[in-house]
Length: 344
Length: 271
Image (cartoon, rainbow over all chains, first blue to last red):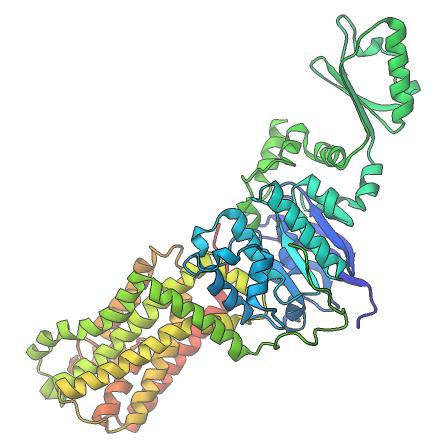
């Protein structure tokens, strides 16, 4: 067995599309055996472009990839029997039934388990004779996932596994992914759901415009971010009327209409100082919102730093626009973000 | 969704078989055969058209002076029928299949697995290639019984021609699919090859009846050597020089098409 515990190693990875658009701009990371690693990012951040290179679907334009000790593109035959892939969408003929699709795939996978068990795992036993085109979006994702793990792969690539699923379907998917991880499978997934990355990932990297903006365990990434206090400025008060912010341990602030947001790495000190001041002055701080750093804050902070406030709006929402462009070769990726940047 | 079996990370003993190229292609071909049976439009163009066209061509042949070239109506219709089968049953049908699978992201999904590219294209083509073979057999049987076509004098040439035709048409379908954006537009993108072949490759009008200069130019078209080899297989009138020339032309087109597929085939939709 491979004693090298880095099942996936990526160094200086770059991908440039036909139109000259650089979707992946020199990223490096590694994934250990039995780890769930999430690539988190907005649409157009380069997640799919990256994962397609890891799957060996395209040749990188720079950098190196090692999956299970092999180059997934040039040493395809050595890697493929040991990996499973779930693409972002589609991939099965719409006129085949679920059972026919599973049978076809089983014939193409080394060490495939019984088709019936895979369908049961996906909760599709009762739908075996239904054509793929008649399945709901969630059923299709479940079929896709069941077939991706049909050969019990050592490494599993999941491109937005829970997009289009309802809350229950998403929880089922998480449970399955955890069970696979516990059985030793290494999982690399992409997601634009913060909740998913926070709940599922052992480690994660936040991709932004083709670069890794932050990486580590969810706790590490979160810890690097400041906490936040927001409230409505009382009538007649200006930010300058507040107690000296640096003495409160506040490291930055911004005003959004009447709402002021303070950023701090010493949340208790800042909150206490502020509330004591308000009490003494006899003020009521309306719409008071005190929150410690979260992955969401980290994410919004990264998106804000790079491209202005509005670009951050998409995360956590099921924003489908621009998703398709990520696969394209005509440099449409990130257009939305750039337009927003220009507008900001 | 719980109950995932724990396996030893040391290997996959006690699991199902390791796949082989043959097994993978068979699985793919079986799925494609099922899909072929479910696609009415493909069935119509791929299965019925090639068998119906020779019948409609028959009256026109009567008006030609085919006897002058030492031919009979049967010896014109049989190669023409096989040509139709290759054009509609294999070339056009497979262009649609490749395009449809690409647009549905099936090709991309298949490429994530153990199948090699050539297995994906080959396995997907197997049902229509089999259709082409069966149609040719039906045409041979039909023309033998109905048109008094005698037994082939050089059957090896005919078989060689048919095999070249099948492989070449499959490869050309891959090339055409690369230039075809949607299933609907396949009718347009396949038209040049279909029309030029029908008019100039010795199907409707045997090259033997054309002026010499035109005939030698037409002989260089992709399907011309296929028709020449099939007809020559029956008449036995193809000289060794001409047979070698036809094989060379067929080989060149096949190699060119295979190269073009390797170079330009698209595995994902253009977006």
